[in-house]
Every structure is written in structure tokens, then in C-alpha cells.
Amino acid sequence: MQWLANLSVRRPVLSTVIILVIVVVGVASYLGLGVDKFPKVEFPVVTVTTLYPGSSPEAVETDVTDKIEGAVNTIGGIESLTSISNEGVSLVIVQFTMEKDVDAVAQDVRSKIDTVLRDLPADIEPPQVQKIDPDASPILLLSVSGERPVAELTRIAEDVVKRRLETIDGVGEVAIIGGQKRRINIQLDPVRMRAAGVTALAVQRAIASSNADIPGGQLESGPENRTVRFNGRVDDPRKLADIVVRQAGD
Image 1: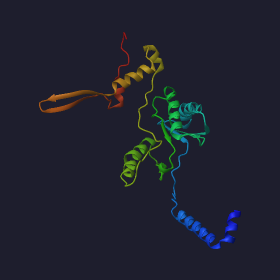
Image 2: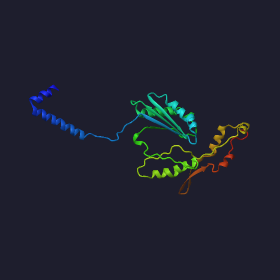
Image 3: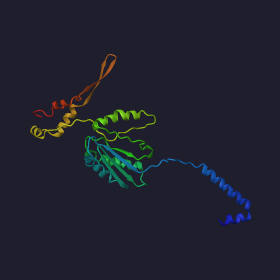
Image 4: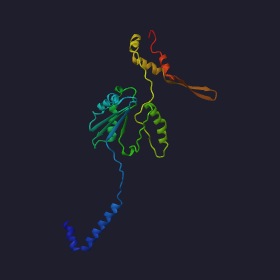
């Protein structure tokens, strides 16, 4: 900066002009500087959400959370691994080091989960792998509680609360986490099953094959074209006892 001091002594007018130009350019640049109050930032954090309706927190942790943790824990670059097991829902949060690409690690997590899908309970909903997006964070969290059974509260949340929230202008998505959907529990008699040579898997397959809607194709009747469908769903739980699991000679 010695040259600037010498210039100020020898040619004070020129040095003053230079300083004024620098000040004006600096002020103009500052005023034109783009400022984003909420800048777009991508964090290398991936969440895995798995719904296991009707299960206790202990069952969720043992049957779902621990297996997912064991699978994703083999991915390199993990900074922290956090899990939450609540009634009917498992949440695994994987935080990677900042130099990791969030899209790449999200794909790695999906690949690892695919390797343990066969070890997870059959009645879970498919695990949802999501990248943490600050712009997509929920702005409102609601809890539904009451004296009614959990299954009925879940139905109210889905059929009433969720639908009304979705009609509000500007709402992008309404998601329900947890709860309990209506289901029928079938108690098997192990003594009679052994005597008949029937396994639990055979009972499950018989119920599944006898409780399904089967498309029957198209039926043309003159100018009309009708869709044929065979409704095989059981409309009364008591009819489940009439399903044939195994016949003599099978």
C-alpha cells in the first residue's frame, strides 16, 4: 500500500477520486447483492419410515428398526444413526458427512433396505426413504386422541381430518403416521392343525386365495361393453371358518 500513500501525497485529487469510485462501487454492489432469507440448503440426511400397524413399540424395534439399522449401518460416511420406535411406526434417521451427495446416499440406503425386505414382517407397509428437505418440513402437526378405540380414531383421522385438511388452499400433502387399521385376528388350534397335517402358511394361503377380487375381462353385449369382476372377498368374518384349507388326499 506504499504506492497509495505516495500517490495521495503527490496527486491528492486523483487519490480522492479513486477512493470515491471504490466507495460508490462498493455501495452499489452491496445494494445489488442478492439475499435469500431462507436459502436452499441440502443436508446429507436420509430418513426411513416404516409403518407396522397395530404393533407395540417393542415389536416395532425388534422386527423392523433393528433390521433396518443393521442394513444401513454398513454404508460408508455415516456420521450418526438415530432410530425411534413408536406404536405402529419405525423411524430411522441417517446423517452422513457433509461432503456426501444426498441423492447418492439416499440411493445407497434404498439398496441396503432392499436386501432385508424379505426379513421384515409381511404386514408392514413398504419402507419410505426420504431426503431431509427443509422446505418440505411439516408446518403443522396434529394429534388425534379420545376415549374411542385406536382403530376408530384412525378411521376418523383418515376419513374426516385428513380430507378436510387436503381441501385447504395451499396444502401440498397431508400424511398420517401411526394409528391402527381394522383387522381380523385368527386364532389357530395347533393340536388340530398337527392332526390334520396343516401348517400356518397353508392357512394363510387359503385365506388369501379365498378373499380376493379377480378381474374377469370384458363382456360385449351389443353396443355395450361391460367389465366383469368376480368379488371373492369375505363380507362376514364368520365365513372365514368355512374356508377349506386342505382336503383329504391332498
